[in-house]
Image (cartoon, rainbow, N blue to C red):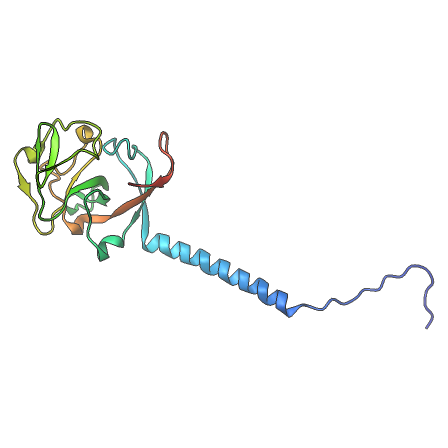
Length: 193
């Protein structure tokens, strides 16, 4: 056999580096597991819904989308200040209501001179104005073992526990705790306080 003269290009066989292949497969596996875990978490624990109406302004705006945690109240109970999502009177055909918990089981509530009183302490930090219509809280109300009292932050433009058709909220009516809001109009994305 004679060799050709001039330029010749020999193709070298590259050896597959097993360590590199294992590293790449490891990265692919962990990315897949992370994505799967995120999807399972969002669909099993979390849920997305929209705020309907201006009752939670300026904290949340009409049409703003929020994420809620559906598992937290299976382990713990709602606390004062939590923003919850619930079905009024457990009505499955109603839209979700988003309100702030101002009274928990055992609390005594009433409204006097436009100010909410819980266990004879004034609560004004959640509301953007004096409460014009006390509704059911015109006289003292003591919450039972499984009763929560909720009011919208925009208290004078909110249908909430002060209304007889909503009343107190039972724990079984609560869908979850609102924990994150998406950016919308005047509001940035962030945690719900």
